[in-house]
Length: 319
Ligand code: UT7
Image 1: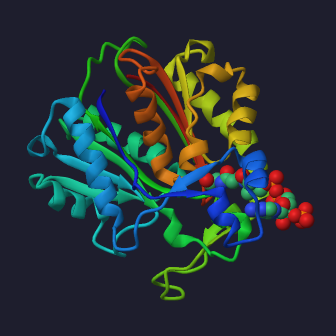
Image 2 (image 1 turned 135 degrees about the horizontal axis):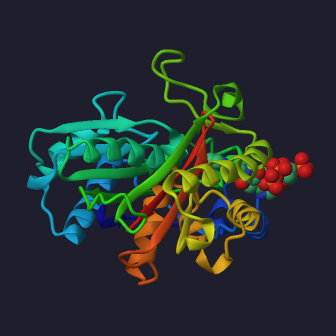
């Protein structure tokens, strides 16, 4: 079960007006098409592991745990400090956590949903008593600052949860991950990708996206994954207390909620202030809902995401 949630946002705020000074765009266009007002940008000398470790410390404190308790660290990131080692091992060193299991998950914006499902396997098999699952990104490093179709959409940040074994009575009242569904379709890679890498160009590359096609795919396919995850969990969608989607675009959040018949006031949205922080967006939104008192222990949460790959998926969990 999730026993603690934490977040970290770099302090520097970039507004749509700031972006309009770099590319041919406007606050009105960005807000109407995406719901974004601003995003955070980490300074260039701040590695993603630092954001991840800060969010992890907050999650551990919320769980009443220390780094000494941690035996598994999974970092979902598409912007690692280095090609290797895994950012999770760097976070382990920074937290001074003991020798244990640490690795990264690369499923881009779906990374946190994938990582939760992976961590649940370790926890439910007794392989981990205290797992850190972190989504952390510095997406602004992947931007082509001449491409207005992408550079206005992404931000930096990190969110983390502590996962521990919970009661396992087989009831949907159990706290913990109740069900999930994960999907990938590698034939749609050219819709959203980074045009570089260690074994191709030898460079980091820049993010490329055919936004309107990704948009269409998101609204249609996320709904199917959500239905599959709730069916695996044995819950009906009207039972969901909080819908916590990946924060790519307010119009996608609204479209998916409408298709699924979810009341808009049950949707946690941070897209206006965070923009799209890829794998960090769901734990950041979770942390926001917990901090402002909307999400409480025992609530039934539905998480979903879609990103490069294409990958997508959903998790149903009771907090
Ligand atoms: O996290 C991973 C998943 N990613 C997503 O889910 C992103 C999904 N896609 C989207 O959010 C939207 O497709 C966008 C926000 C990226 C774009 O919105 P859209 O309504 O699909 O616009 P579009 O791409 O069809 O472009 C419409 C027009 C174009 O101009 P013309 O060809 O109609 O003259 C673009 O050149 O808007 C133009 N445009 C802009 N105008 C002002 C594109 N970007 C901008 C901009 N400012 N920043």
